[in-house]
Amino acid sequence: MKIEIVDSKTPKRGSLVLVVGEGRQLGPFGQQVDKACGGALGKAMAAAVRFSGGKGQWLEVLVPGNGLGRVLLVGLGKTTEVKATAYETVGADAVKRLATAGESDLAIAAEVLKGTMLPAAEAAARAALGARLGGYRFDKYRTRMKDREKPTLKSVSVLTQAAPAAKKLHAPLDKLAAGVEITRNLVTEPANIIYPESMAAECRKLTKLGIKVEVLGEREMKKLGMGALLGVGQGSERESKLVVMQWNGGKKGTKPVSFVGKGVCFDTGGISIKPAGGMEEMKWDMAGAGAVVGTMAALAGRKAKVNAVGVVALVENMPSGTAQRPGDVVTSMSGQTIEVLNTDAEGRLILCDAMWYTQQRFKPQFMVDLATLTGAIIISLGHEHAGLFSNNDRLSEQLAAAGKSEDELLWRMPLSDAYDEGLKSPIADMQNIAGPGFGAGSITAAQFLQRFVIDKTPWAHLDIAGVAWSKKDKPTVPKGATGFGVRLLNRLVADHYEDR
Ligand code: BES
Ligand code: MN
Ligand code: ZN
Image (tube, rainbow, N blue to C red):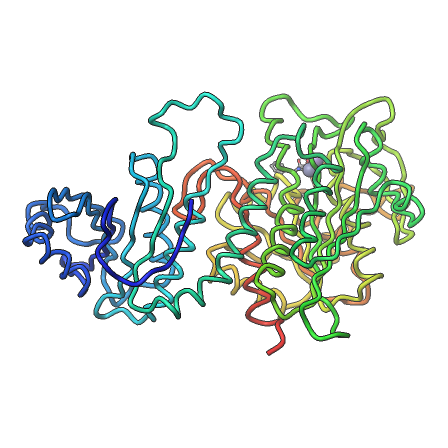
């Protein structure tokens, strides 16, 4: 599907979407279209008693003749309260309504109505972003789609009076959307297709964006002493990998920002095996790594003026004759030893080595890790917020604010010595889970990770187990893999960490 921004003029074919304010208020372009079809739009709105132009209301009007086909009116609600994201929703919902409607062309008039404080260019750019994010589909494995299920939409034109400025704003947003798509695709793919080696190969493809990509195998990781990571992968036929991606768009010599992702390509639980019901969901236990890959692609794609490092730890957690056993003691790259009481608490074991490596090699300005780390975070926060854990108030506030602007919400959770107590082991420096009855499963997981933060490096851990996959559609986030984290981290960098 091609999405472009063009000057406002009535399209020659296909459907046209017009925005309407509360009280059935059309903009100048809408009025012009209405006039051209003999006032049919005004009459249709008057007849459709329930259509007031309220937020999210849709009204479809057929206008035979006049060279116009279908006109769809979409309500924005009170024009004084309309925000940029409302235009993302319009773009997304428009594409979803028309994707399989039989037509190949859609025009969306992204007018800013009287009363709304928003540049016209911004409205159009956001509508185009919404169209791409909301129109995301993963049809690769459907070989028997019925004709009526097949997408027919080929081209989306966003109409605006500010086309040159809108195109300029849209260019980096389109690279952001490309990053989100990479993440969604990686997360959606099943574990027989995306496993450590094939995911590393996908990372390698970022080379074409100017990213330097290195892939470490088990031999290299053994040399580095990554016993915690390797222990998780040792039950699998697939070789574990660590991928290091560097984007150097900033001034030479400035410390990089860093992102670390949990990439458990499939989590059976290992010898502490999970129940069968729902285990298929564990194909997306690499969503943290997926978000890091998508973020790096977005930053490089839009040539962000920042030095950024992305490190993803890729393993498969399997039970087998070579798998690690509950009670095994492993030595992490940091030198700290860990008693593995539960092989299903594997995310922290791979992250601790990836985090140590990242800090030791790159001395980053900050480190954010993303992981589908605990089921407990779903108990705490459901699917509305990801858990945020941090040793640094400034980084936390920046992240939470970025999350609010991009609608990828975070909620900060506590860390403290009292929680850390739960990780005391009778035999090693720590155990990988707290004892029975201790509770606070997400917090103790974060405490575990904090033991691998060097010298107060500003660090934040995002537990995205509840938000990486969605069972319900949202306008710009169709159900399935959400791509959570890419918009958030891209915004964090754009707002605070780019050279001016
Ligand atoms: N990948 C899971 C966490 C998870 C659960 C993600 C549900 C998404 C949905 C993680 O590796 C895990 O198994 N965690 C255990 C930890 C426990 C053994 C301390 C959990 O949450 O049950
Ligand atoms: Mn697990
Ligand atoms: Zn896991």
